[in-house]
Image 1 (cartoon, helix red, strand yellow):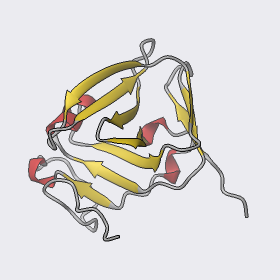
Image 2: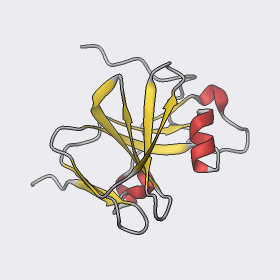
Image 3: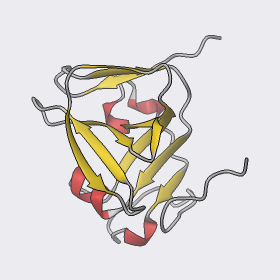
Image 4: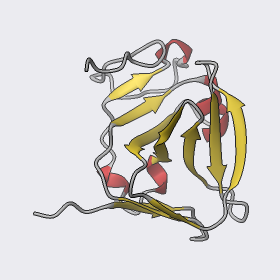
Length: 141
């Protein structure tokens, strides 16, 4: 059975993406930056190897320094304001999309909770997911 690419974009349709591969990580992030960006207790993301991905439309980009000390770039639609994707100076081969930006958000399957040390008591994420106070260690090669 052929793989169905992950597709999505902003609320008004001005920005679109198509990603051919499977996610390398799906997470709920409770860092303070994600709380500010989402207006709630966490953000939900799918990260992919960027190779073969296509982006269309012009996003407004905003650089911040992540907890890791590396620059992270958030991309959002200048028309509707929807957050769509993130990229990382230290990992240029990775693109991360917001779960709610998927055409089929049901494809999102969180695997871990990151930055759980910054969680608010009222933010209820799946209690069965592994939780990390920061980012999980990379898998062994």
